[in-house]
Amino acid sequence: MKKLNNIAVLTSGGDAPGMNAAVRAVVRTGIYHQLNVFGVMYGYRGILKNEIFPMESKSVANIIQRGGTILKTARCKEFYEYEGRKKAYENLKKHNIDGLIVIGGDGSFNGAQKFSQEFDIPCIGLPGTIDKDIAGTDSTIGFDTAVNTAIEAIDKIRDTADAHDRLFVIEVMGRDAGYIALHSGIATGAEHIMVPERKTELNDIIEELQANERRKKLVNLIVVAEGDETGGANEVARRIKESCPQLDTRVCILGHIQRGGSPSCTDRILASRMGYAAVDALLEGIHNVMIGIVNDKIHYTPLDKAVKAKQEIDPEWFKIVKILAS
Image (cartoon, helix red, strand yellow):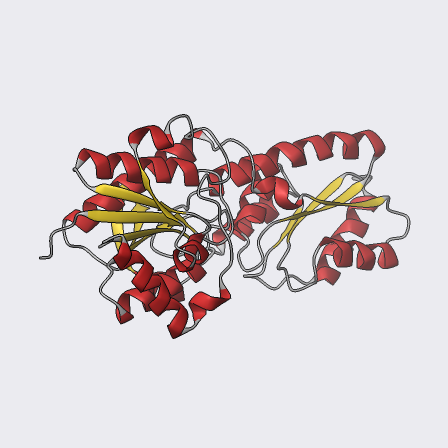
């Protein structure tokens, strides 16, 4: 097995609370094992632009509690092409880097998988995405914080909904996955939850709203993932207003506040364990896998499986929503 001497870490794709905790864990674990650790600014774009710099233990001091990512993140179309990946490889070799840790989502892992297949740079992926849409781990870095941010906002919205007897349609993030909507909706007692993974008949919801009105239940919350096939909160509200003009219907789109903020304890611990495990995997000669945690144990998923597979939402969750909201 080739001796590991120099490793690099980058953050890619959308930012997620806890990425800094993961970077910190990678740097300090690498230094503990007498490795030279390099940071890459702006994800894959930073490799292409040779924005690669050595990191020390003090480089990651006082960042575990910070949201965002000190390494920044960016999209990089050039890395999609072979010539771009070749240029990235040449820049990494200038620094004698022989291991790369990528913190990001499935798109970032797709790039890492191709890159590792084409060149002799072993890659390890850490799932950093608020959407929790990657199979092979019970949770992803940033999900817990994003859900708690949404819960805090929805709780406040319910207060004003109750004060005015209003129906609120609240849109949360989740273009392809509805976990934020599902968890925040259940935790805040939402009457209806709409997610991309499950077709929702809006006419059924309208009928229930009309029945609720007849029994004087005027306060209702509908939590919608942005990727729901109906078209998001504005479209849901528009159709409800057409059928139920007597209801005082309002829309609130939570947007990017779900990405920011200080990471929760859960995300800090998750990111720290994963960052430590990523360096450990490289040292053990385990390459081209995503680090996950399943049943509180470190779990390895080949990058190609992490790219292709998605978490599936158990239908039991929707049964719970219906019963508890009745």
